[in-house]
Length: 375
Ligand SMILES: Nc1ncnc2c1ncn2[C@@H]1O[C@H](COP(=O)(O)OP(=O)(O)OP(=O)(O)O)[C@@H](O)[C@H]1O
Ligand code: SF4
Ligand SMILES: [Mg+2]
Image 1 (tube, rainbow, N blue to C red):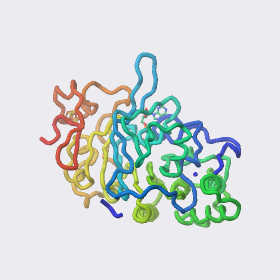
Image 2: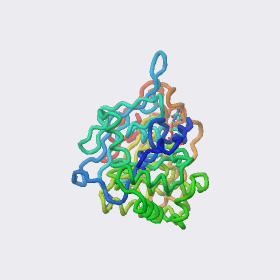
Image 3: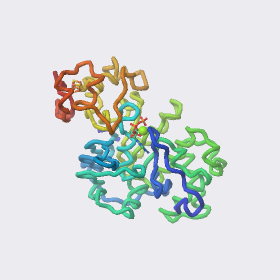
Image 4: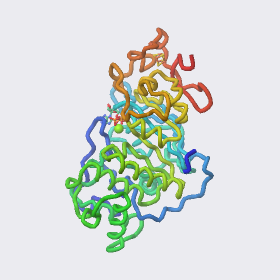
């Protein structure tokens, strides 16, 4: 194990429009306050019970995301199991459209309108997220679980300067107002390397680059010292140096506050260097889960091998993006019978087209959903 968003926007005017359908799904719940969900309040962490480092912080079992349809519901996320411990970084990787963001949003029930989240277990420490009413979820979101959304432009209110969005959060969750809140907002932007933060706080989201908006979201997400940070492609718009600085900031929070990090990324180099454990998603399912070393050195699932291309050693992960794989992934709600990877798999057998492989243990700390894994 690695050592290791105030008042609502409603009061100010329009709330951000729902996120567009598709793979850039960000916070799309019309009733969700982006400031609230990104996680906001000044640096003093919200008190939560101390926990042993190896006890699960987040536990999700059989997490499903469905959408009602006449006849039968469409299933987008199928029975995902995730555990994140304090100080730990757990990654989710997979091609575009594999259900990574939907899974992340489901963890605090922030999926877009029309989607339903179910789980056998969904807990943060001793808090049963699965049974919480919306009011309880609002208490958790932002305070104990904060989120860096994949598309910050959709997550931030377009008609309010970013600084005011931060101070609204500070006011809402920490009671900070006036100059104290403004100073803290500047401090937070400074922390994530936003240049000239005293001027930037007065800018609107559309006046900022994608990289700058990502940093604003990260600052907001860290502001209340969350127990768990869910970061969905948090550094894609940042250059390498800035990415390294932001990741160091996150590591520092993990060390100092015991924060758990769920990192969603296409960047295998980032995952190899930051993650303790990796979940590989395909067609809305986790098809492989392993500690990072095992996954990069001995991937068990043909899909993971295809993603990694010829890379086998962590030290040799030089490519940043996932390797392109011939063929296209299925629509989540219309998977083929049997193994969803069968139409693209070089190892396919007749059995694969008929029988869905369950996630099973291959070796210590490695599980794969493949009939032929371990051969
Ligand atoms: N708001 C939405 N409305 C309708 N369908 C959606 C919505 N969000 C996601 N989906 C469906 O769920 C699928 C998975 O979306 P998701 O955003 O989880 O993918 P992802 O793995 O995060 O992809 P990417 O790597 O591109 O971010 C999409 O391809 C789409 O079919
Ligand atoms: S179950 Fe069969 S088709 Fe699916 S990944 Fe394994 S070998 Fe390939
Ligand atoms: Mg996504």
